[in-house]
Image 1 (cartoon, rainbow, N blue to C red):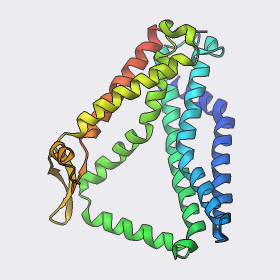
Image 2 (tube, rainbow, N blue to C red):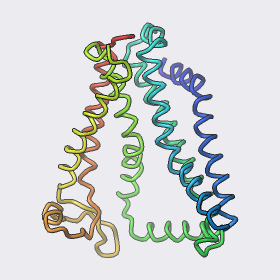
Image 3 (cartoon, rainbow, N blue to C red):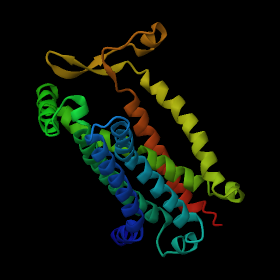
Image 4 (cartoon, rainbow, N blue to C red):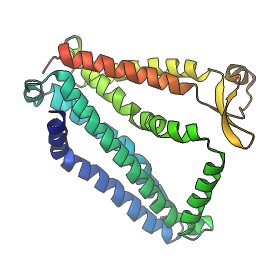
Length: 272
Protein backbone atom coordinates (compact mmCIF):
# COMPACT_ATOMS: atom_id res chain seq x y z
CA UNK A 1 0.00 0.00 0.00
CA UNK A 2 2.83 2.41 0.81
CA UNK A 3 4.29 1.77 -2.64
CA UNK A 4 0.95 2.59 -4.30
CA UNK A 5 0.64 5.77 -2.24
CA UNK A 6 4.16 6.85 -3.18
CA UNK A 7 3.35 6.22 -6.85
CA UNK A 8 0.24 8.38 -6.47
CA UNK A 9 2.33 11.12 -4.83
CA UNK A 10 4.80 10.99 -7.71
CA UNK A 11 2.09 11.27 -10.36
CA UNK A 12 0.24 14.05 -8.53
CA UNK A 13 3.27 16.23 -7.79
CA UNK A 14 5.26 15.75 -11.00
CA UNK A 15 3.86 18.91 -12.61
CA UNK A 16 4.64 21.04 -9.57
CA UNK A 17 8.14 19.62 -9.23
CA UNK A 18 8.84 20.00 -12.94
CA UNK A 19 7.96 23.68 -12.60
CA UNK A 20 10.26 24.20 -9.60
CA UNK A 21 13.16 22.23 -11.07
CA UNK A 22 12.68 23.80 -14.50
CA UNK A 23 12.59 27.35 -13.14
CA UNK A 24 15.75 26.77 -11.06
CA UNK A 25 17.55 25.25 -14.05
CA UNK A 26 16.51 28.11 -16.32
CA UNK A 27 17.75 30.70 -13.82
CA UNK A 28 21.08 28.93 -13.33
CA UNK A 29 21.75 28.37 -17.03
CA UNK A 30 20.67 31.83 -18.18
CA UNK A 31 22.58 33.46 -15.35
CA UNK A 32 25.71 31.44 -16.14
CA UNK A 33 25.53 32.47 -19.79
CA UNK A 34 25.29 36.12 -18.78
CA UNK A 35 28.16 35.72 -16.32
CA UNK A 36 30.30 34.10 -19.02
CA UNK A 37 30.17 37.30 -21.08
CA UNK A 38 32.27 39.04 -18.39
CA UNK A 39 30.56 42.30 -19.37
CA UNK A 40 30.38 44.78 -16.50
CA UNK A 41 27.06 44.78 -14.64
CA UNK A 42 25.63 42.10 -16.96
CA UNK A 43 28.07 39.47 -15.65
CA UNK A 44 27.43 40.42 -12.03
CA UNK A 45 23.68 40.26 -12.59
CA UNK A 46 24.07 36.89 -14.27
CA UNK A 47 26.07 35.53 -11.35
CA UNK A 48 23.37 36.59 -8.88
CA UNK A 49 20.65 34.99 -11.01
CA UNK A 50 22.63 31.77 -11.44
CA UNK A 51 23.40 31.50 -7.73
CA UNK A 52 19.71 32.11 -6.97
CA UNK A 53 18.74 29.15 -9.13
CA UNK A 54 21.41 26.83 -7.69
CA UNK A 55 20.96 27.78 -4.04
CA UNK A 56 17.21 28.28 -4.14
CA UNK A 57 16.13 24.98 -5.68
CA UNK A 58 16.33 22.98 -2.42
CA UNK A 59 14.34 25.36 -0.15
CA UNK A 60 11.88 26.07 -2.98
CA UNK A 61 11.30 22.34 -3.41
CA UNK A 62 10.79 21.84 0.32
CA UNK A 63 8.30 24.71 0.54
CA UNK A 64 6.39 23.40 -2.49
CA UNK A 65 6.19 19.94 -0.95
CA UNK A 66 5.08 21.40 2.39
CA UNK A 67 2.28 23.44 0.82
CA UNK A 68 1.15 20.42 -1.19
CA UNK A 69 1.24 18.30 1.99
CA UNK A 70 -0.99 20.81 3.79
CA UNK A 71 -3.39 21.17 0.86
CA UNK A 72 -3.81 17.44 0.25
CA UNK A 73 -3.93 16.50 3.93
CA UNK A 74 -6.03 19.18 5.57
CA UNK A 75 -7.84 21.35 3.03
CA UNK A 76 -10.47 20.36 0.49
CA UNK A 77 -8.47 17.50 -1.01
CA UNK A 78 -7.92 16.32 2.56
CA UNK A 79 -11.45 14.95 2.69
CA UNK A 80 -10.43 12.41 0.09
CA UNK A 81 -6.97 11.78 1.56
CA UNK A 82 -8.17 11.24 5.10
CA UNK A 83 -10.91 8.81 4.05
CA UNK A 84 -8.56 6.43 2.26
CA UNK A 85 -8.91 2.91 3.75
CA UNK A 86 -5.48 3.04 5.44
CA UNK A 87 -4.15 4.42 8.71
CA UNK A 88 -3.30 8.09 8.68
CA UNK A 89 0.28 7.28 9.64
CA UNK A 90 0.62 5.11 6.51
CA UNK A 91 -0.31 8.11 4.37
CA UNK A 92 2.20 10.21 6.27
CA UNK A 93 5.00 7.67 5.77
CA UNK A 94 4.29 7.59 2.05
CA UNK A 95 4.34 11.38 1.81
CA UNK A 96 7.53 11.55 3.87
CA UNK A 97 9.24 8.85 1.78
CA UNK A 98 8.37 10.62 -1.47
CA UNK A 99 9.34 13.99 -0.02
CA UNK A 100 12.72 12.58 1.05
CA UNK A 101 13.40 11.22 -2.44
CA UNK A 102 12.47 14.56 -3.97
CA UNK A 103 14.69 16.52 -1.56
CA UNK A 104 17.63 14.24 -2.37
CA UNK A 105 16.95 14.85 -6.08
CA UNK A 106 16.82 18.61 -5.46
CA UNK A 107 20.20 18.48 -3.68
CA UNK A 108 21.69 16.61 -6.64
CA UNK A 109 20.22 19.22 -8.99
CA UNK A 110 21.60 22.01 -6.79
CA UNK A 111 25.10 20.53 -7.09
CA UNK A 112 24.73 20.32 -10.87
CA UNK A 113 23.47 23.90 -11.08
CA UNK A 114 26.30 24.98 -8.78
CA UNK A 115 28.75 23.45 -11.26
CA UNK A 116 27.07 25.34 -14.11
CA UNK A 117 27.28 28.55 -12.07
CA UNK A 118 30.99 28.05 -11.48
CA UNK A 119 31.66 27.33 -15.14
CA UNK A 120 29.82 30.46 -16.21
CA UNK A 121 31.75 32.60 -13.73
CA UNK A 122 35.09 30.79 -14.12
CA UNK A 123 36.62 33.46 -16.34
CA UNK A 124 35.97 36.19 -13.79
CA UNK A 125 37.71 34.06 -11.16
CA UNK A 126 40.74 33.43 -13.33
CA UNK A 127 39.88 29.81 -14.08
CA UNK A 128 38.92 27.81 -17.14
CA UNK A 129 35.42 26.27 -16.96
CA UNK A 130 36.79 22.70 -16.89
CA UNK A 131 39.07 23.54 -13.92
CA UNK A 132 36.08 22.54 -11.81
CA UNK A 133 36.75 18.85 -12.41
CA UNK A 134 40.38 19.05 -11.30
CA UNK A 135 39.35 21.07 -8.22
CA UNK A 136 36.70 18.48 -7.28
CA UNK A 137 39.19 15.69 -7.90
CA UNK A 138 41.77 17.37 -5.66
CA UNK A 139 39.16 17.89 -2.94
CA UNK A 140 38.16 14.22 -3.15
CA UNK A 141 41.81 13.14 -2.92
CA UNK A 142 42.37 15.34 0.13
CA UNK A 143 39.22 14.00 1.82
CA UNK A 144 40.17 10.39 1.10
CA UNK A 145 43.56 11.01 2.71
CA UNK A 146 42.13 12.16 6.05
CA UNK A 147 38.67 10.56 6.27
CA UNK A 148 38.53 7.41 8.45
CA UNK A 149 36.25 4.50 7.59
CA UNK A 150 33.65 5.51 10.16
CA UNK A 151 33.49 8.96 8.59
CA UNK A 152 32.44 7.49 5.25
CA UNK A 153 29.81 5.43 7.07
CA UNK A 154 28.44 8.32 9.12
CA UNK A 155 28.49 11.05 6.46
CA UNK A 156 25.59 9.84 4.22
CA UNK A 157 22.96 9.47 6.98
CA UNK A 158 24.12 12.71 8.63
CA UNK A 159 23.84 14.61 5.35
CA UNK A 160 20.44 13.03 4.66
CA UNK A 161 19.21 14.12 8.09
CA UNK A 162 20.41 17.68 7.55
CA UNK A 163 18.92 17.83 4.04
CA UNK A 164 15.46 16.62 5.10
CA UNK A 165 15.20 18.25 8.54
CA UNK A 166 13.35 21.29 7.21
CA UNK A 167 10.83 18.99 5.55
CA UNK A 168 10.19 17.25 8.88
CA UNK A 169 9.57 20.65 10.46
CA UNK A 170 7.19 21.76 7.71
CA UNK A 171 5.19 18.53 7.82
CA UNK A 172 4.99 18.72 11.63
CA UNK A 173 3.83 22.34 11.50
CA UNK A 174 1.25 21.58 8.80
CA UNK A 175 -0.20 18.65 10.77
CA UNK A 176 -0.16 20.10 14.29
CA UNK A 177 -1.16 23.53 12.99
CA UNK A 178 -4.23 21.98 11.34
CA UNK A 179 -5.52 20.28 14.49
CA UNK A 180 -8.83 21.37 15.99
CA UNK A 181 -7.33 23.98 18.32
CA UNK A 182 -5.97 25.86 15.28
CA UNK A 183 -8.80 25.01 12.87
CA UNK A 184 -10.08 28.58 12.53
CA UNK A 185 -6.68 30.01 11.58
CA UNK A 186 -6.34 28.36 8.17
CA UNK A 187 -2.76 28.66 6.94
CA UNK A 188 -2.03 30.77 10.01
CA UNK A 189 -2.11 27.62 12.17
CA UNK A 190 0.83 25.90 10.47
CA UNK A 191 2.74 29.20 10.25
CA UNK A 192 2.26 29.85 13.98
CA UNK A 193 3.31 26.32 14.93
CA UNK A 194 6.37 26.54 12.67
CA UNK A 195 7.45 29.84 14.25
CA UNK A 196 7.16 28.45 17.80
CA UNK A 197 8.93 25.27 16.70
CA UNK A 198 11.74 27.29 15.11
CA UNK A 199 12.40 29.22 18.32
CA UNK A 200 12.36 26.05 20.44
CA UNK A 201 14.68 24.20 18.07
CA UNK A 202 17.19 27.06 18.03
CA UNK A 203 17.43 26.89 21.81
CA UNK A 204 17.69 23.10 21.85
CA UNK A 205 20.25 22.86 19.05
CA UNK A 206 22.42 25.64 20.48
CA UNK A 207 22.47 23.70 23.74
CA UNK A 208 23.55 20.54 21.94
CA UNK A 209 26.24 22.45 20.04
CA UNK A 210 27.95 23.15 23.36
CA UNK A 211 28.68 19.43 23.78
CA UNK A 212 32.51 19.41 23.91
CA UNK A 213 33.04 17.12 20.91
CA UNK A 214 34.27 18.19 17.50
CA UNK A 215 35.92 16.97 14.34
CA UNK A 216 39.58 17.77 14.00
CA UNK A 217 42.71 16.45 12.33
CA UNK A 218 44.96 14.30 14.52
CA UNK A 219 47.82 12.23 13.18
CA UNK A 220 46.94 13.17 9.62
CA UNK A 221 43.36 11.90 9.85
CA UNK A 222 39.99 13.20 10.94
CA UNK A 223 39.16 12.26 14.52
CA UNK A 224 36.77 13.10 17.32
CA UNK A 225 38.41 15.77 19.46
CA UNK A 226 37.41 17.17 22.83
CA UNK A 227 36.86 20.93 22.65
CA UNK A 228 35.33 23.29 25.22
CA UNK A 229 33.07 25.29 22.92
CA UNK A 230 31.29 27.05 25.78
CA UNK A 231 34.58 28.55 26.99
CA UNK A 232 35.44 29.57 23.43
CA UNK A 233 32.09 31.29 22.98
CA UNK A 234 32.56 33.19 26.25
CA UNK A 235 36.12 34.15 25.30
CA UNK A 236 35.24 35.04 21.71
CA UNK A 237 37.84 32.57 20.42
CA UNK A 238 37.64 30.67 17.13
CA UNK A 239 37.57 26.87 17.52
CA UNK A 240 40.17 24.79 15.71
CA UNK A 241 37.67 21.96 15.23
CA UNK A 242 34.20 21.59 13.73
CA UNK A 243 31.52 21.12 16.43
CA UNK A 244 29.31 18.08 15.82
CA UNK A 245 27.40 18.07 19.09
CA UNK A 246 24.39 19.46 17.23
CA UNK A 247 23.96 16.16 15.35
CA UNK A 248 22.48 14.29 18.35
CA UNK A 249 20.16 17.27 18.78
CA UNK A 250 19.01 16.99 15.17
CA UNK A 251 18.50 13.23 15.60
CA UNK A 252 16.43 13.59 18.77
CA UNK A 253 14.42 16.48 17.32
CA UNK A 254 13.76 14.54 14.10
CA UNK A 255 12.47 11.54 16.06
CA UNK A 256 10.15 13.74 18.14
CA UNK A 257 8.86 15.59 15.06
CA UNK A 258 8.08 12.34 13.23
CA UNK A 259 6.47 10.75 16.29
CA UNK A 260 4.21 13.74 17.01
CA UNK A 261 3.22 14.05 13.34
CA UNK A 262 2.23 10.37 13.31
CA UNK A 263 0.10 10.98 16.43
CA UNK A 264 -1.58 13.88 14.65
CA UNK A 265 -2.37 11.81 11.55
CA UNK A 266 -3.77 8.95 13.60
CA UNK A 267 -6.06 10.85 15.91
CA UNK A 268 -6.04 14.65 15.74
CA UNK A 269 -7.15 15.48 12.20
CA UNK A 270 -9.35 18.55 11.75
CA UNK A 271 -10.44 19.21 8.17
CA UNK A 272 -11.53 22.60 6.83
